[in-house]
Image 1 (cartoon, rainbow, N blue to C red):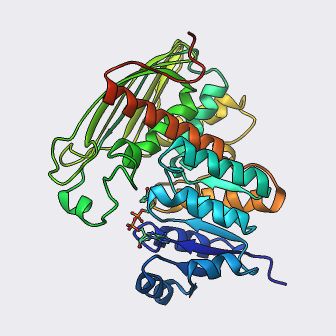
Image 2 (image 1 turned 90 degrees about the vertical axis):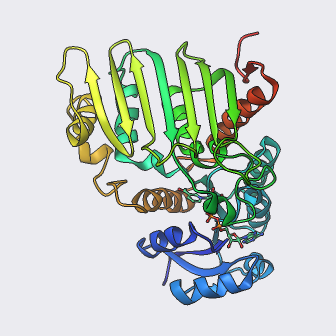
Image 3 (image 1 turned 60 degrees about the horizontal axis):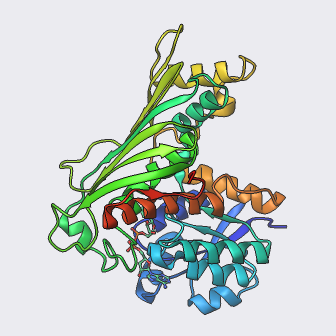
Length: 360
Ligand SMILES: NC(=O)c1ccc[n+]([C@@H]2O[C@H](COP(=O)([O-])OP(=O)(O)OC[C@H]3O[C@@H](n4cnc5c(N)ncnc54)[C@H](O)[C@@H]3O)[C@@H](O)[C@H]2O)c1
């Protein structure tokens, strides 16, 4: 008997092949259908990756489809996800979860009512570096967080924004460099540093001529833990530099650059980098009882594009089987969107924005 979870993919654009390849590499998943608002795109995708091209209504009606992975423009994630959940499918949506809190809440409510699993892609959670830093923080290796610094100084050409009529629009991208590109690091920041309570942001559109949203934004933040921090994102930083997340605590610092653990420095211990830093963080955090490969297996996010998507989809598959909660569930997807939207509100109003949990 074939016990693979049968997936349909909605939105056959640039990220779709990453999902198709990841699912093809997982023994207990099968991509059986695909759909797109433009049927010729679904047909071309089907010809390359093998699923049946179907209309969306037929995906929803097909009892042989167990799960849907939503790779459509960001502002359509919740609408498609809600319909799929109501049709009894498990749902993965690409990042960001959606572009408004109302949409995120609708998706969360549909998930609760359906009892199906919901995951939001945030693949850098599955990078070995971020898992090792999380282990180090959980074990108190860095002490109490004092300062965090998140930077995404990326570059996108005008042609990139012109390549899809939804890109860089408020209506479907929900913002510019922070909502689209920066949300990965915002999610890591939220996961590793905890909830922010205040945000003050400034944004501008500087380097692109046909772009209604921001291509540069900076923010200062305070966290519930007492830590303070900065966030900078751009798609105007030619030629583009690796994303960087630095966490400085009372006992040490960790710096993730690109997808690698650039530095782990703990007072009284040798400063280490790269693989040595990952091994050190994991071994110290587990009291030496577990090898680094247990908490941060080399096959997870080892650097090749697609590995972290594969790891996140493997987590989702396991949760569909067991009923467990995916590592990046709807609540966590919403948290990242909430922080991005708070930055936008502050940039628009010129005011400090208090997030839920802020003291009056
Ligand atoms: N995790 C990552 O690293 C990563 C990378 C790239 C994109 N993404 C996310 O994936 C999503 C898609 O981005 P992309 O770059 O692939 O965009 P894209 O424009 O290349 O592809 C989107 C596809 O969705 C289709 N579509 C539009 N409306 C639809 C509908 N109602 N039903 C089905 N299909 C529909 C479009 O025709 C298009 O083929 C975005 O939310 C983006 O943020 C994530």
